[in-house]
Length: 136
Image (cartoon, rainbow, N blue to C red; front, side, top):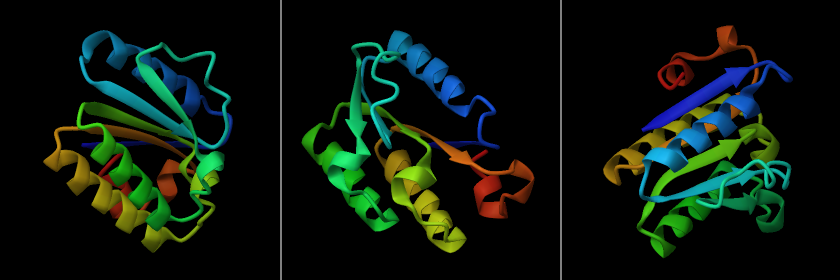
């Protein structure tokens, strides 16, 4: 399952993501991973959530992020939630078709493994494509 939180910069997407992480920490027995572009959230996270600084791994494409997420799961089958803060800042790719392809892949990947993935994306929700709206 994939959920996309989309809104203009400064609209509270990260705060909403942190709230969802706290809720998941209280209700889930699985492991949780938060991928972000820098270590800004490390003081806001509970100990159940593993923080990953994407800058340390040079995840500069959707293909690299796909491989990284697959590798995380291959190393730990107990992951129940993946949180990605500011997707475009991590990937640095403005291509809408690449984004849509990634979201579709991620939905299939997480659904097959009974995982949840919540991502934030800066942008006007009214400009979201049909594929993006499917995950809003």
